[in-house]
Image (cartoon, rainbow, N blue to C red; front, top):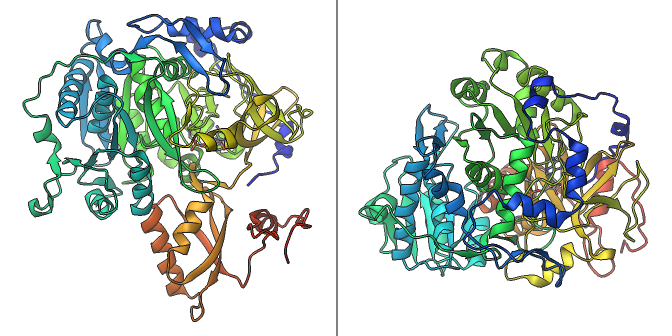
Length: 633
Ligand code: WT7
């Protein structure tokens, strides 16, 4: 669903960073860095030198089999080694690596040395479970230290992780589990959410009946809520007993630069979720470089990204980026408004957070309570703020800037995707900012806005957002679905990467994202495929057929609007609406927010029977229906 952002293009407000921020910044000269980035081989090779390699690479980027790009060919490296082991012999050894805090006011700190030993124990335990290099391990865990430890333990021994967001429910979970062929699942008894404990184990128990490949389930007793022993089948083992007695030393797997690192499922416009596959070295280089430059990470930072680890933002910028840079990452389990809407600001004050990275939906949500809550806390430690997940509307940007940053912290509005792995379009702290735009492509990144024929569109005109040169953290394929990988992303003229977003450039070249060009919704910044929602509706006994579109929502950005054809004898009354909402939530989880359900007698279709959601969207937006010549009736 695209928004008309043309009115924003003559945004006159421009904000510049203060002297101190510029003084500290890793990148002080934007033009010079952009110039360097034009030679991608040289630029990324230089960035790759920050790591310890077991073997040097031959070629920075191998473009011989486009779009199957390879980075740092024949290089040997290990992510966990670079994120943790290598700091043990430095003065970071006893620095806090992970600072876990939750809505109950509890906290747990793991220094780099402690984290190192925990990872080794878990890595050894995974080996004992029969996990070898290249095997997939799935995780369905809340924001807790064991999740980070398990992911890094996988890296250490060369296993591939597949983390499923703990806010997804049975239907979505089963689909992702089966697609990944995982043998081991690591999960927990529950997670804290707004004063309640959500029983994750129950969701797992129900799901596993339909997940034949899972041989072992490891359960973290996170909330210590009683799990009945009788419920523990032969397959299950408690996390603590699993690692008990394991050695805290473990050898490092020398991974090829292009060995798979993880799979992360994300929603597409049609069919099943897509298993986005990332590989090792390029991902490390891209993520560490962008975090360092965009959030200007220094030794004394206390960095907090509020994203859940179950999404790409959590992978790249809660765990991997911060640890690869040797900083302290705050991992917080809790909602922004619980126990009250000052919860996050209290955390900022308590720990002296210096860099805060969050999503527009959270800002819009907290904005409703005004400046009262942020004013109760001392937020003066903050130096840089960030935003990700969807376009941030200028009002929310201004509120964030004034009330949280007190007008002195620049906002990094970062555009990127599960597929890109790393920030692509984003300001740097020294950049002049305009509220509502992610500004310009980062150094080394070549972005354009084009028409169907691949020609750049004039400034101010809308078009497809494409990326013209390879970048190191790019995904390499869709797991077990190469055909779809080629079809969805690489069919633009010129062989450029099609991002799936519509955008415009203003007179300064700043890029304004208008929204997705496909049938993907953005609900609170989370990607939800209309087809997944439609399948969830259709699996309810009352529904014959459905079409789903996005409906604007002042806080969530978008919510679901469903048009349903009901079976004979069913009437859409309050009880059925509630029942349907519950059903969709059971299938997909709380991410699938149903805003409106309407009953219809027919749906607009092409003569070949494809539902024309475009017509429904135009109708919803009160726009002209456009070309309806292919419409059946
Ligand atoms: C889609 C990717 C990247 C991590 C979180 C989302 C939208 C993301 C921005 C931004 C405007 C944005 C795009 C993109 N998006 N960041 N700063 N400004 N739009 O990852 O779930 O893969 O979604 O999110 O539509 O294509 P994702």
